[in-house]
Amino acid sequence: MFVGLYSVRLVLNALGEEDYGIFNLIGGVIAMFTFLNGAMIVSTQRYLSYYIGKKELNKLSSVFQSSLVINFLISIIMLVIMQVAFIFLFDGFLNIEVDRIGSAKIVYQTTVFSAFFIVNAITFDAAIIAHEDIHVDAIVGILEALLKLGVAISLLWITDYSLEIYSGLLLLTIIISRLIKVFFCYYKYPEYKFKKYDVSRSLVIEMLSFAGWNTFGAACGIFRQHGLAIILNLFYGTVINASFGISNQINGQVKGFSENMLKALRPQIISSEGEGNRVRMLDLSLKACKYSFLLLFFIILPIVLEMETILTLWLGTLSKSVVIFCKLTLLLSLVNTLTVGLQTAQQSIGNIKLYQSIIGGVILTTPIFGYLVLKSGGSPQSVLYVAILIEFLACCLRILYLNKFSGLSLVDYLYKVLLPIIFIVLIGSSINIYINGVIHLTGFIRVLLVSVISSISLIILVYFIGMDVREKSYIHSLISRIKI
Image (cartoon, rainbow, N blue to C red; front, side):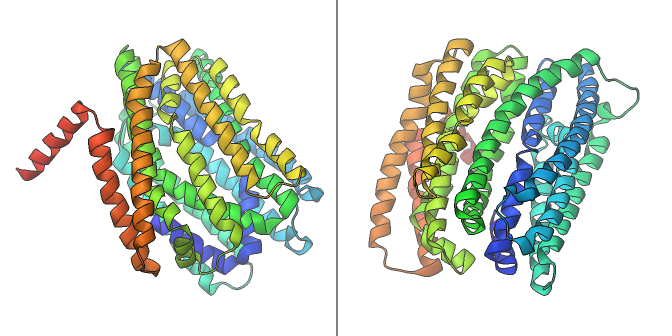
């Protein structure tokens, strides 16, 4: 996270606000087409983890090879769509200065090929997660972050065509990290090697149906984020896109903490359903909701309290819109995390057509209402208030849907997730806001002290309020083993 955030500072200083805004704008447009990356990883991993749970290991090779075929075909279709979109996007649709259109087109094409390699590596990402080799995912993630840092540092010595070179080097970084995962999978998992052609037509159709609806849900989320970036660009230009891009960079890095914990829990949730153990599956889903939220809140609280100081230390210069964008984007992620485990629960059960139609349809309205708010004279930040309200509505619908169709107890969600979270947030925020007000230090020392106090207070609150008896017992056993 720290490497990633420092890289952003170097890139912003090297490219300047306008070129950085262009890079985030183009990246947003591409992301609207590559939303299927995360959706397809979850879909493929769902089938792998499900059959691991059912102990039907003979199905794994067929799932793996079918996924490879599906993702290759999708990547080809995606390339065609992106090249058609290229014609219209740069024909007056995007609000980009005329003298930067050429650079923006190069960034677009390099990002298109980045998306191509990412989509074709989806099967290997899913296999690593399904087999719970989380350390491999972590090592490759760290390596990719360090490579991106190297790319950012190289911009200090590049004066001409820095935006074009930056996008090209990022493409190379993505290729290297994906190839490492490909080689690992073929070395570690012999059941996936092509000993025979094992693509099942019926399985391909089933996976495509599941992935299609999962992709629709992911598309709605991506359309919300990058649709907002486009309407902000239409009303306020690329400088606001730079502020919005910075807030998304911070949010992406910080949210990685809770998402990586969910990545470790997801195979267990899905395999429990595969074993026919619905009770354990729902219990793990509720734990995923609670601890994903608390882990994200653990990181976000000191950041929000010291946002201006952190941004000044990080970026050097500070525009007025960045602070509020960052705070609201982090709040949006917190609200989403309230039901993040329930999303995995529904995917493990399958039958996601109605679920994705309802939830995705609600989220899909965000840029529409955001546009109407800006059209009526709203501030740039007002679109995020709209997004937060709609996300809260989506969370309520997820809970009610799982209750009606999957047997989730509303009482369990209230007592195991919501009430502990409410008490910890209220007490933790009150304590830290008070302490923050009486600290008279400045700069990095102030941020460090606030972070330490916040961490200690939240750890105590999570232990006494957030953990149930079994979880406390498990912590005690871990401590005993460490002492031994």
